Image 1 (spheres, helix red, strand yellow):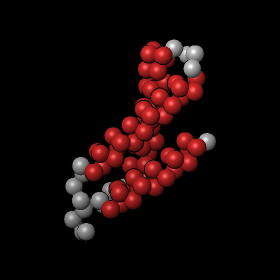
Image 2 (cartoon, rainbow, N blue to C red):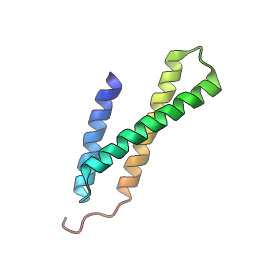
Image 3 (tube, one colour):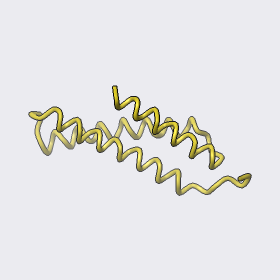
Length: 87
């Protein structure tokens, strides 16, 4: 549940950044959600491979950390985009 709230606020941040660069905020929010889910899934798989399935709380914390890495990837990609000409 907290993950959804965090994703909401991160999505608003990414949307404002995209709008400031003259890009479609919805496209970048969708990219954020897809990157979040994909990297969280990869984090779960890696966590199971490294730690096993015994510690579910630790596994989920590892997956959330990986998901936040997905946010950082999207943010870095957006920061590297050129600013809009109208600003």
